[in-house]
Amino acid sequence: MTEIATMSFEDAMKELESVVSRLESGNASLEDSIKLYERGAALRAHCEARLREAEERVEKITLAQGQPTGVAKAEGL
Image (cartoon, rainbow, N blue to C red):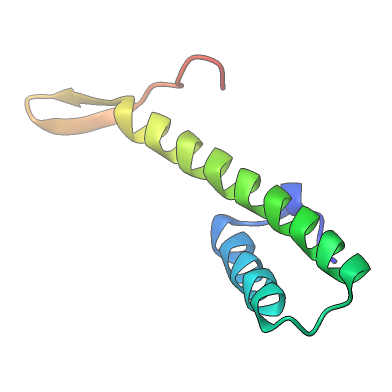
């Protein structure tokens, strides 16, 4: 399995969708279901963090005369 911290948002979402499908199918053993749930929770947290980072970057785009002039680093990043 790929290390979650290095995954792109899109790759993490794709894997999260796969995890959800596998859990919903009901074909996994209890132990596998627990592992899938833990992986899914970590993937969800990663996706939320990546979205939050993107939102902060968009909020920090600086404008001059209505045109973007650059991006200011959001506090805490």
